[in-house]
Length: 166
Image 1 (cartoon, one colour):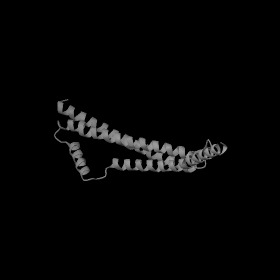
Image 2: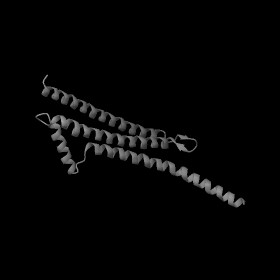
Image 3: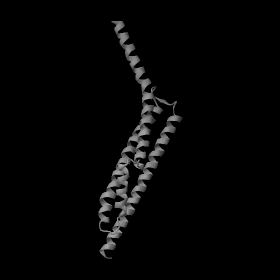
Image 4: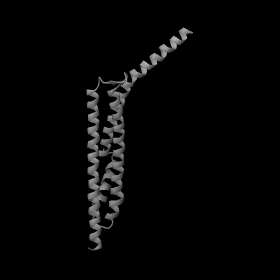
């Protein structure tokens, strides 16, 4: 096997690994979408369940939803960073030794389209994760507000009793 053939085989192997990595990224996104949908259905079907006379199952699932959405955002961000590194640093360096540079040209095209403010798939993923996080956060606020209001009313009543008893 000559040097050019060896370089091409390494390039081919690395490109296959990159594609497998991108497939894992899509599988991970499917997991997060499924988790968000399951949490929404769990909130709907357990809306009447209350723990410790105050904490609803809806609040618990909403807090889990905020956490899952935050993890999803971070995961999209790290996959996006790693994919960029695989493209721009590793594959492009290998392509310098090849007569054709398809990934270098593709990455240059992507970079050019980003200058024109084209929405990328990772941006859409992040937007969905942020939307889910905002939804779950709003549910948390709506569930926590009555608990805080009740605690405040109890504190005011207690202060009034203490003040009236003195």
